[in-house]
Image (tube, rainbow, N blue to C red; front, side, top):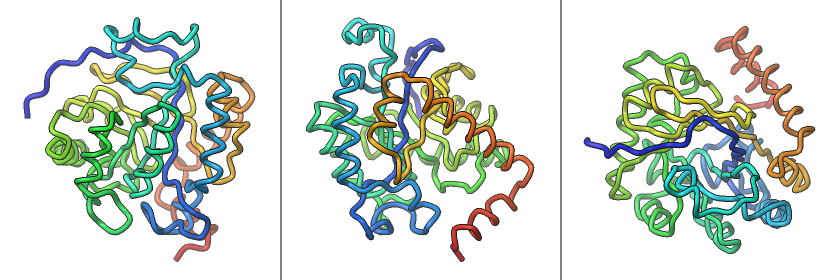
Length: 279
């Protein structure tokens, strides 16, 4: 597949927020991946709406998409020097339809990263829904093809397969090249970005809580701040406004979790599932 060259933002400060599914209480398994582990990242719809209201008050003019990061688009946005804020959703759960409508009520657009191998499966977006989100101005990106449990442990060939097959399928759905992606499960390594860059990805989002971005073979790698089911609207607004305390707290937890993953390997996941009571 031939992809046009896309200029991207040089490494700089970007605040990206990572959501997953937005659900009604007790209906966590109706959208996205099931289970208690996944449910940690599924946010009550009413709480999500308070998040958006708080974001509006904390600086809604800074909220945009990767389109605004392209050099020829920067002059069109007036953010008063604030870091751009990007709202992202992982997995491709069907709740994206209503989440997008909530964003649109504020005049915003989001990034929806789809697990391409799950398209049309129960609880996940189908082709028509993905196409509709794209036509409404939301960014459709890849969340890999099969959602590997530990993507950073995949071989180079496996990584190329995951990115290539997912972006080819999604490109067919939206009718144009896919240039954004996010890494499943927080298992990032440079080789993951290298493989993404080789397949035409220009923006790759990780789960590392940082505002710093970097370039890997022409692909901008951006961190994100994870929002869980108990994250308050005040915390979300503080992160988006650039306050230090909540960002430092997430960074500390991330480093501890990263170390546990490195030391525990596959046993880290087994222990996590056991603690959550998942079979």
